[in-house]
Length: 290
Image (tube, rainbow, N blue to C red):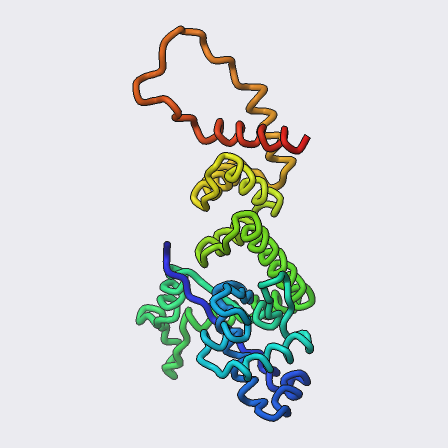
């Protein structure tokens, strides 16, 4: 998988926030503030989500181990964050940091290379104007245009960006929790990222159906679940109605197999195409529900 870079933006009014001021005024408050920032950094790759993996019986002890901080200080910080809306519990062992959700950014390795390339000045961009040797560049003009565009887009989106990010983070946390509940194990970091990626193009109900199909087929593995989701994604499935319509059309258009009387080739026993396996598992699942 291609390398990805993450960052956490610290808001300019972070230390002016009343809740952060309140945290710092507690005895040892500066230590608690540093722990809060380290918690945000710990959640960067998971989109602001912290998961109690059971390494330690207490969540605070497990985080203290990860952060190299005193367990009592971490426990005090967690209690403050939960009491003041800086941390929300989305599930029994999952917690969301709303401020981190709004401040996390990422880009792929290729995007980072392009950004670095664009930032590098080129000799051929310089143009000498007039006798006073005044120099302007195409890069400068492009930057001014980009700044104007960014300012316009920011003004239009500032009222909707934060709620949209919070809703997206909550939906991602719910899908990850559903995966954990059905398969009895938390998804790996790469698996969690791919789940969130699928969630950007299809409903959570489609992801749940793919997991159910894999379980019913006796193959509760992420590779199999991902192959089902990729197949449906390529066919334009965005919701369960699209999925059901696709199955109905395939059933209607599929001709009956020819009665040739020939035996299948040697070594082909048990080799059923993925679509047929999926259909059989889905039929069994629906029959159990009825």
